[in-house]
Amino acid sequence: MQNVTPHEPVLLSDAQREKQLFRQAITAELARSIAHEIKNPLSAINFSLYELRAVLERPAQDNDNPAEFLDIIEKCGKKINTALEELLRATSPRPLQPAPVGLKTLAEEALFFVQARILEKNISTVLQVPSDILVRADKAQLMIALMSLLHNAIDSISAPEGSIRVTGSAGNGVVRLDIQDNGKGIQERDIDRIFEPFYSTRSEAAGLGLTTAQTIITQHRGLIRVESVYGKGSVFSVLLPHPH
Image (cartoon, rainbow, N blue to C red; front, side, top):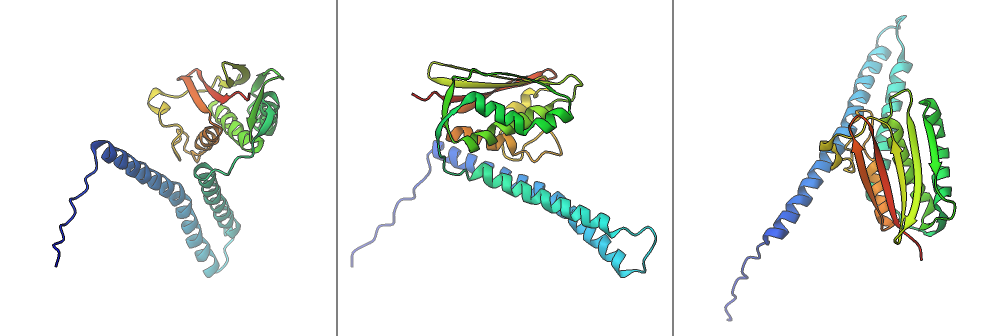
């Protein structure tokens, strides 16, 4: 009988080990974030069900209002559904259907769809994008990215004289769209984390808008750059390949 020599153990290199540990850490952080995002509304749902059951099981009282607990359950259910939909959009991007589209058209339509929130906060807007700049993009997907960036700018503004400035340019094979706001800005410690799923400096935000925007822009072989001064505002720059 032929002797069988056991295989030597295969060890990871330092680089492979660091890469694997990094992936595991990201996965663990994402799992914790998802759990936190869903656990809070689930707790509110469970509390409302407990209170609603108590109301239904006892004799009716003048101050009973079961509809109040039904409203809480409905709102929390919608919040969970929204968080899951945004997570799927951010982590499972759809295949692109690119076609030539005007950068100014994209910016104008994105501003139109967030106009209600702009008016609600009395924010002034300036649009300066040349009409002859084209990009090759999936219009629907890129609109989602731009609207996410605009929502982020709107949410950062609390001053009574808020402003958002959208400008576009092209050169050296790159199309650039800048979205500048005079909001609260981003602290230096947060800059490197703002595109992480579920990371947000606002407690009421799901923290997936910027993740979704970055995913879509990356799909278009582009990138997003951020410049910010805390207390003064931010500029989010979308850089895309110029179609040839």
